[in-house]
Length: 334
Image 1 (cartoon, rainbow, N blue to C red):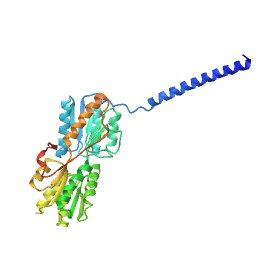
Image 2 (cartoon, rainbow, N blue to C red; image 1 turned 90 degrees about the vertical axis):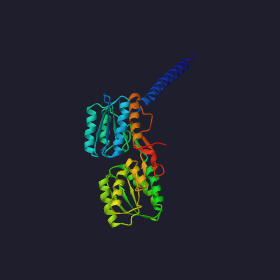
Image 3 (cartoon, rainbow, N blue to C red; image 1 turned 135 degrees about the vertical axis):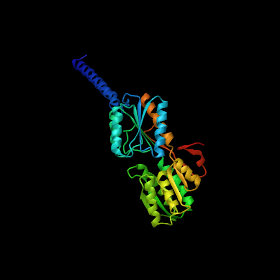
Image 4 (spheres, helix red, strand yellow; image 1 turned 60 degrees about the vertical axis):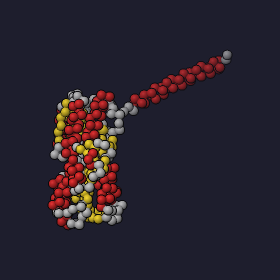
């Protein structure tokens, strides 16, 4: 073999070796890529067996039902429980989250005090390895809370709005009482109401007031509305508590056959429907949602995953005189 041919084969061998090395290097980089794209690690909890349950005031039966259901489920699963209320005060809520962190809570169940104001508190808990499970109200952020389990307010409000339209005979003047503006549910429910009602040209909204979810404020606002519009035939309310205030004001004004709807599915609403002073309500399954949040918290702490999407919508049930007997304490039984 000539010297030229020997050099050629040597160079070819060296070239192939270089390619092999380069290939191994490329292979190593490709194998390492998935490791660099790993998902967020599961939070381990603060170290204790305490589950904090934080809701608005228990003077509202809806929130009391949430707290009671979550507490009972947590105790049944072997956890200690601390039940507290933020009273829709974001500053107080932040302090309660700090308390949960200090107590090394295993998890936090929270019906929050504001879609924007709550983000920082949930993130602070997350940084402390404490997972938060939100119920009833969402926050304006994803990937911070482990779960956001809420009633399908859009579906529920549309369903009960259909009942309202039928009761009104598709015509007449009506008013609206809105919930707290910082609560995303208020806007969602109002939009869903109008998506149904606004299709009927015979229905005219003559007044719209915010009553902040409160019965006393709803009474005062309705009383004022009725003074200016005594011919009102219906009132749509963002929740049952405001509906109770509207019913009282209508009764005090000596009016009858006013169609009034709400959202929640409270025992007070059920009683009013049976009495004929309320047309209907959209039941948010508060007890079920609260229990689900605790079950998912337990599963997450044990396995690192809930097995569910972060945002979970639970359908509402339209409650009228036809099915009201199946409703008790926010639980609907067929």
